[in-house]
Image 1 (cartoon, rainbow, N blue to C red):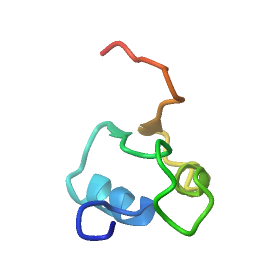
Image 2: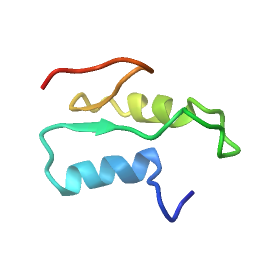
Image 3: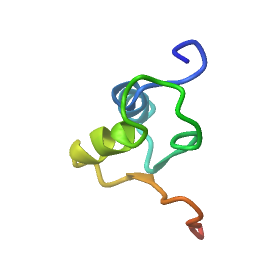
Image 4: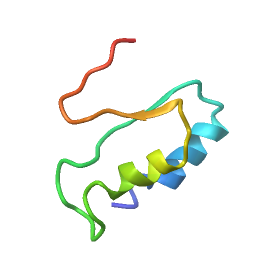
Length: 64
C-alpha cells in the first residue's frame, strides 16, 4: 500500500514539515492489508509522544 499510504513515521514527518497545528490519522485498522499487526501503526504513532496528532477509536467522533 506504499504508493497510496504513509506509514506512521512518514505521516509524522509530513505533520512536522507542514508545521501543522493538528493532524488526524485515518484509513487504518479496517482491513488487514499488511504483514504487521493491524493496530501496530497506531501504537507506533502514539509512542512518539506527539500530542497534536491524534487517532480516533473506531466509531469515535470529534467536534472541531
